[in-house]
Image (cartoon, rainbow, N blue to C red; front, side, top):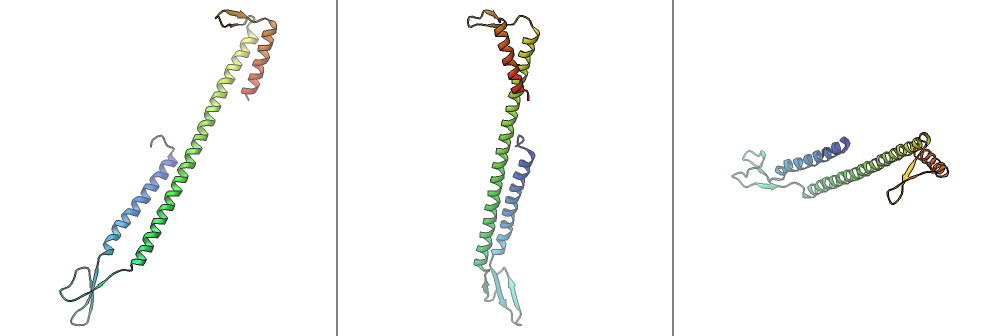
Length: 162
């Protein structure tokens, strides 16, 4: 994860922290689902306990419908956060890819500009310019070919060096 931008790492950490918090709360809530016993002692006092008494006791249970609704809401919230996270990650990756592509295009344009300027400088400053033919032999440019190459180099400089 060291090659990811810092904002992406922060988002990933927040998502992991949110998941951890959700599962920790769920684990802590499990004892709340334990059975609770209710009984009345000999003096008429009502008692509640998670341990069954020696006398007959009524088992009290929480509302399973409410528990299901809470669980469903938590699940929906987690799914929504996960979708938001995935969307942000996708947008971040697309933005990074776009920035990388633009940087590569700028680098290529700089290289083309440098080459065009070098060619133009060579054509303007050196009296005898040559190229190599298919056989690898030097072929010196005549005045017409030199003028065409000079015009072509000037056009390349104007296009690539903006």
